[in-house]
Length: 508
Image (cartoon, rainbow, N blue to C red; front, side):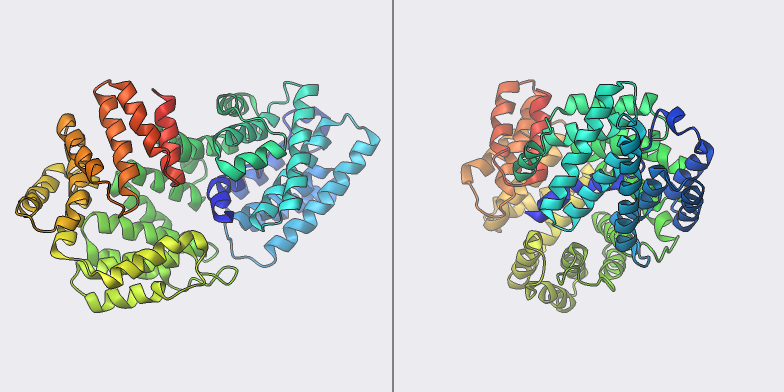
């Protein structure tokens, strides 16, 4: 369950790290240009320089909470990104405590000081997310609720305190879309979900906020990419952020991931290589992730030798986290094994599969990798499996005619009564190609063959088949038929599929 929470909340960890006061006259003594310079340094990943600059603010204005918050936010940003610098977590906690003390003293003098409330709420918000990351749920609840309440007090007192709408928008959006226990947690915190309101609040922060514009754009890009599935808008936002902060490797990596979602693999590959060329030793896991996704790209391009090299780099020197294997290691080894199999090296593939199949210290949510590895050990890739992989890769890289050539060859095998156990996966892949080529009725007919069989394995096949039938019926403007299949797909326990289904239902 912790993994599910982290899957949905981690984008928040990246976001609310520099929520500054919009009404600066109350803090006119602070040098706004100096503050903006510090924010820009941080977003360009010049952390040491940003810390030094905010230290100068603290020395000049030791009673003002702004400097403490800004400095703590640098450490929080580094912590959420796994930046390898000494004592990051310890420094974040220490400086946050100092900021809380400074803000509370300001409020003792003037309980209506909105800026002091804002910085206090911002520090509470970061501490809440920090404790979620560390599974300290009681602390996370307390700090999260305090931070949210302060934001509401601010906008109630001054509706034009525009930067406060960034934090409120994030809360309102996530409380509406997150499933299960996370939504229940939002309810406990007293946060009403309203994603439309959240998006409007976010846009208000972008248009009328002061120092939060880049952070608001960042969140909007994350939202469009991971939850709204509006990849065109997300790509434009990532590109704008990357131009504004060219030294921020994470913006480049995020743009690359967006290009992958849009199946523009050449563009994604170029961006990942740009990030990898920087060889930033501070960003160990980010670089491993980049190699992992480059491995995926080369695999999808049917360039398995190059995929092997990047998967090897992806799993290299990844230390256990909390005594358990990282997901990059688990899935990286599985995909490395598959790449070796595609190259005809079953012996090396088995070594990779065994490394994962025998591990019990992998996080529970990575048991899919363990299951996959064990299946691969028992069932080597057949000629048919490999051809199906070629066809799928051609389809995903938009080489539909090449995909059809391979699939038509496989159809002869299926029609001859061979590879019966693979026919449903074959129907699914051929159906997707037909759907992309506009042969919608033929696609539906193939998908319905799968439904008639009701296969139990692979476990993803039935829900995704319902989802694709829903997409097909929607193309034919048969909305009620589409709705019925979307609802069946939504019964899946796959969180990503459920989000896709909910989005599809919202647009019916």
